Length: 82
Picture (cartoon, rainbow, N blue to C red):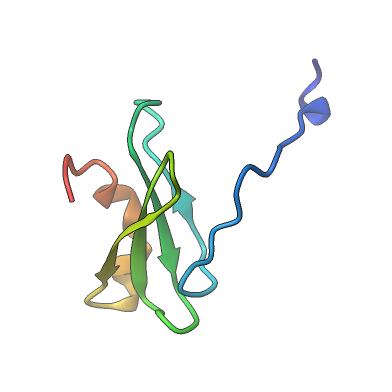
């Protein structure tokens, strides 16, 4: 299969606190239970939302100290717990 023949299937539509720039999980472990998303703009701007990777339920909303803290979401995903 050529790379351009790969398609993505939408499995869920998750309402968030506003538009963001990043959605991440932990690629080193496919069983990682969380999906992290930033909300850089909108009602809950400068926050990080943590979702259950299987049910897509919002588990926690983390308020960033500064707008740039939201862009450091890559560091937060390696935390073991919430």
